[in-house]
Length: 392
Length: 88
Ligand SMILES: Cc1cc2nc3c(=O)[nH]c(=O)nc-3n(C[C@H](O)[C@H](O)[C@H](O)COP(=O)(O)OP(=O)(O)OC[C@H]3O[C@@H](n4cnc5c(N)ncnc54)[C@H](O)[C@@H]3O)c2cc1C
Ligand code: SF4
Image (cartoon, rainbow over all chains, first blue to last red; front, side):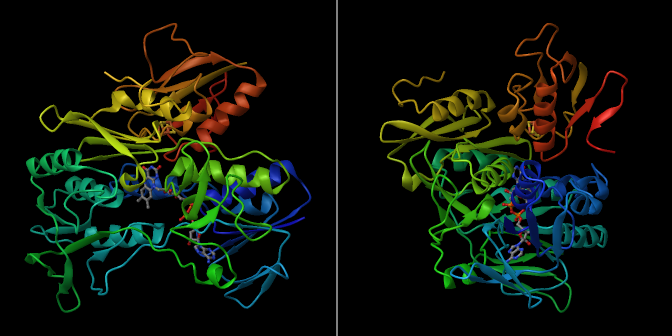
């Protein structure tokens, strides 16, 4: 059997490891656009704050790939798929035949249409190295601006606060995570941030950057903001072109069934890129967190090597914004829910939203209310009806 | 065999991967940090580290749980104090 895995992040690498564990003889090739052995993106903020040294972000050593007899191609991307003849084309001109192909390509950051020294992104280790460099170069009176209203914006808030940089944050929506949060939850986050000195501008568009070669400011629809540093965290937009050209069904992500199989025979997807049919919540979702990526990598390996087990996991993403704990569990898209129940309030400093579809609990967002986590996770897992579900 | 399991609360971000894989050993506290249990019980007050007696199979699963932690906040030592995970 010849396995080709595209993407050397946690989903792809876990898949390669799990395949090798089950089968000592198969050929396994891992095609990785990045040059580094597997590292934890989740540790990048810790590294930037100096909480862990750079070498601690790595989860595998370079020698590991050889020891596992995994052919590891670095700095090379996959750019072509021929599903009929079962091979992929790589940027170095090579063609790799496969019996089973796993697409685990994660997400590419969405960028703004301008660049100057001082503009940063936060997805890869190279991004983090670049950011570490510009953080060192800042003058004493440096100001920071963040563009975004999601998980990466939270990382930037914590990072800039760690370096005591006065910070302005703007985003297009009325509040953070507009696709998931309602007004009460949004207001709680806004209150928490503004009370801690963040200058917050909502419903604000990015217009342009100011500066010659170095950033001096950011122009938004609200005016000009002085800035030496800009952190952009406005989501990801993966390159689906090679997959679409091959006829792979692509929605917000690469669509799969509950077995992580795409519409093309012998082609599978796992991790941030996969928009998989989640049998627990009863629709296609894209998860975008570490637990999901790792578990799907392992599940995909088992399925590709012949097991017939659907992928089941209620995954979560926990973060915090300047000390306010924020947890997403399960399916948290407002538009896909029939009803969103709200517990707590801004006044009580805690808001939980419970997402209900067809009478069932399918997701939850907890802001300042960690205590609801276990009950909500269990309710989703056990497919409880909203009426059976009581939370105090 | 006996294993010494330790969570570094400064590194733990409450991702809960460990809880998913080994709920008998890890659960989250109010601060959203993983604490350590002995087969689902807490014979001594709540703690971030414990020595527990495990089978070979349980040990494998604990290593899997530690591997799943995105911040490598879980440390596993054997009886002699040798660090089994993370690999040094
Ligand atoms: C700063 C930061 C903090 C985070 N914090 C948390 C957290 O606290 N908790 C949490 O649960 N999650 C967190 N996440 C999210 C988590 O890291 C991701 O969900 C996870 O890394 C996804 O893994 P993946 O393998 O699916 O994708 P990725 O890690 O994105 O890996 C995909 C790889 O494929 C490569 N690739 C893409 N296209 C191609 C191609 N055509 N050919 C070859 N290679 C290709 C990419 O370069 C990349 O290296 C964080 C992410 C970031 C960036
Ligand atoms: S997996 Fe790691 S970060 Fe997540 S709860 Fe467990 S110890 Fe904490």
